[in-house]
Image (cartoon, rainbow, N blue to C red; front, side):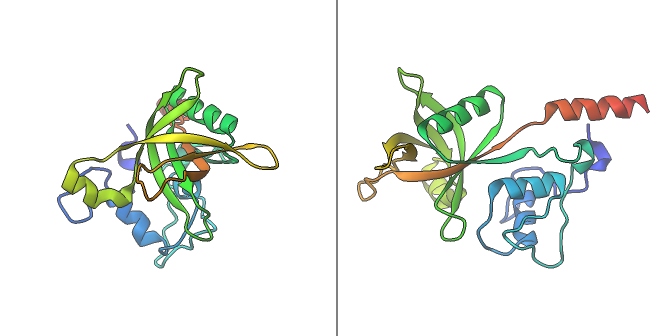
Length: 205
């Protein structure tokens, strides 16, 4: 319905070329290959907010392919830090209930931060997340050889010596018996109420 207003990269996937996603290629072309925040990338693409990290590469792309739909200050991408057991569970449940996309970050942006995508979850008898279904864009070769694009990972909760809880997941490899800590979650809202409002105002013109 957005029609000719959209001037961004072709969203068709897969493309019949080596880089199957023009949107993915758009990110590669627009930024240096360095760490950054998932919500910042989303908000650059949708709203035109320029991220502080990573820096944009030349020629500069201002993004903002849907910025006229959303009021100033409204951001669809949100980064949620402090992955205590309670905060992790509340965020996952809210995202699944409200049809939000979920990105999961491990490590720190300044060192070896990495993002993956959560596609679903299992819950134990207490209603807590016990497993997550997660895909990693770095696993392309594994997908092509084994046909597996989404893995099932066991969630483990721990307690810091000074108190407070944290959340991690097990990779399933014997050599990685310790859980990988989840540093933050990025959630992306559909923004349906803003889309509806935008098209209503368009029809009223």
